[in-house]
Image 1 (cartoon, rainbow, N blue to C red):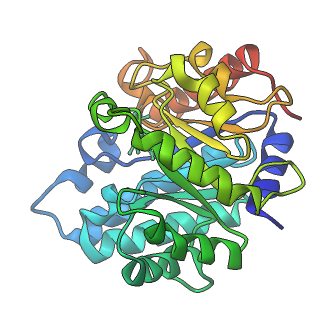
Image 2: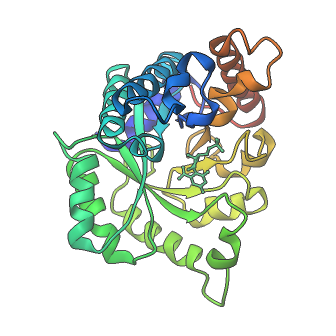
Length: 298
Ligand SMILES: O=C(O)c1cc(=O)[nH]c(=O)n1[C@@H]1O[C@H](COP(=O)(O)O)[C@@H](O)[C@H]1O
């Protein structure tokens, strides 16, 4: 089944568009995982603690949200043991029937991109995800191997179009023919040939939830794309900011939050003693917040 229809099914089943980010920032991990940030500890023990924390987030997400987004960098900083932990978390999430968007932000010349694509999208790749994030900076030919791998494996891509960080504006929207628009139009052309039954394609776009004023325009310019919207919570965006990205049937966008859920304990008065409870309450609050602000499927 087309990745876009698998995602639509997951959003309809759970009745919300939350993409839970799994970003195990070592410095923010609750005390019971402190070994993970102890640079004198064995890397394998640090990575095991990271995996334990992330598996708890998978449990938290299971059956409640359509998808999770593990961020590879926080695993890779622990070397081979960290990469093994990433794979363990991806497999656990897929076993829990969560769709997995591997936040790996790959992008390279085509011959190299093909190997990155096999690693993350092909059957028996090391760290196989349902979809991954990719950077389009090297041009259309650098994305083609990822598209081929996604098509061949019922997978998807989320291509960076308009990022959430403040510095993105200067490069992505500059000039007479801004790069963000070029990438969006290319995605629309490719996506038109890859529509699922939901009318969306397996080629999605990353657009920051922090770009609230632009979201309705991107929705129009990317009619077939699932939009992955990071920036909710820790980067300051709220439910009202993301309304423009949704179709009227509640499909078409996923709202991502990482630190705002996983590390809610730091801001919750009861959190010091109970980080899981704090994350659980933050996730409930995000789901309720979005259900009241945006049209919802399911
Ligand atoms: O591709 C992404 O997920 C991404 C794109 C973007 O424009 N901005 C952005 O913040 N992200 C990722 O989304 C996550 C945001 O994390 P929080 O700010 O903690 O919710 C991080 O993993 C970022 O790498």
